[in-house]
Length: 425
Ligand code: PLP
Image: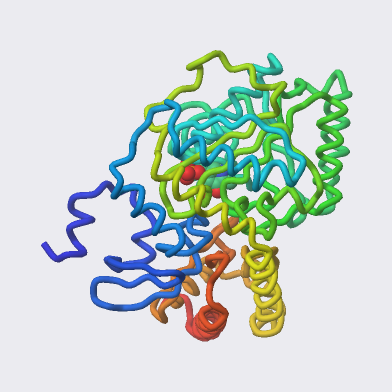
C-alpha cells in the first residue's frame, strides 16, 4: 500500500476534508501546516474555526506541558477539579462579567453538535413546547436533534430517519433578503390558521458560516430578540463556528447588543483544538435534573487548561485590535483585488470570516476549482454555501500580516487561473 492509499483502504468512505487536501500532514505552527514531504501550506481554514489562536500556540502549550508533567488529573467525568474551577472562574471574570452576562455553564459531550442537542433539549424542557424555528442555510451539527435544525439536503439525507419538530424560516440572503422574516414569524404566530405552533426556541447563527458567510444585519437580529421576548420564545445563539472572536468580539451576538437565552460554544473554546463544548443557560432556565444530559467526556481537563490559558488573550486589548486590523486588510484586499477580476464576484465578511461568492458566475464547480488550485499553490481553504459556491476565508485571528497577504495573493492567482481554465481541464 502507498502511504496515501492506506487511508482509502482502511478508513471509512465518510472522510471528507482529506479528499480536498490530498497530503499527509505532520506538523503545524501558527498559521502554517507542513506535510510529511515537507510542503508548506498557509492555513485559511483554522481547523474549521477551532484554531482561532493558530496551531500549537506557545502561550497555551506551555500551560499544557506543565499540567501533563505534574501528573494532574486528565479525565475527570464531571467531578470537581482544580482545572475546571480555574476555567469557570476565569470565564466568568474575563468573558461574562465584563459584558454584564449572567449564565450558568453546562459542560456537555465535547462536540458542537452535543452542545446544540443540550440547548434544544433544555429549551423544550423549560418551555414545555416541542417545536423549534431554525433558518434556511443554517448548520447546527450532525446528530439527529441538531441535524433536524440543519438545512443542507445532503447532510439531512444521512440521517435516514425523519428529522422533525423544526420549522425553517428564511434567512436574509439572496432573493430572501427582501423578505421580512420577522414580520412573517409575527404573522404566523398570531394567525390561528397558520398551522404553526408557538415554538420553544429560535436557533440562529448571527453569521451563517457553513451557509456561505451570510451575515445577519444588526437590526434584524435586534428585531428577532424583541420578537422572542414578546412571544416568550427562547433565543438560542449557536456560536460554535463564529464565537470565540471569529467576528471580532468574543461572542458574535455582541455586534447586535443582544443577549440570547441560551448560547452554544465549542470549536475554539479550548484554544488548542482540544475537544470542549459549553452551553450557557440563563439561570432561570436551568431546569435540568441532575444527570439528565450526561456524557463520559464532560471533563476534558487538558481542554480546561488550554481554554483558561486562551482566555488570557481576552484580557489584552491588542489582541482584539489585531482582529480589526486583519478585518480591514481582508475587506480592502477582497474588494480591491478579487472583486475587480469579475464584476459578478461578491465579497462579504466581518472580523476574520470572509466569503468570496462565485455563484453568479454560473459555473457550478468554480469555487471547488479555485480551492483546489489554492491547495496546489500552498493554501488550505474550504468552500461553503449553497452548491459550495463560496470560498470561505477563516485564517487564525492572530495570523502574521505577511502570511495573510501571501494567502490572499494565492487566492487571487487561483481565481485568475480557474477563470482562464475551462472546467473540463
Ligand atoms: N454549529 C455550528 C454553527 C457549526 O458550524 C458546527 C460545525 O461546523 C456545529 C454546530 C457542529 O459542531 P461539531 O462539528 O463540533 O459537532
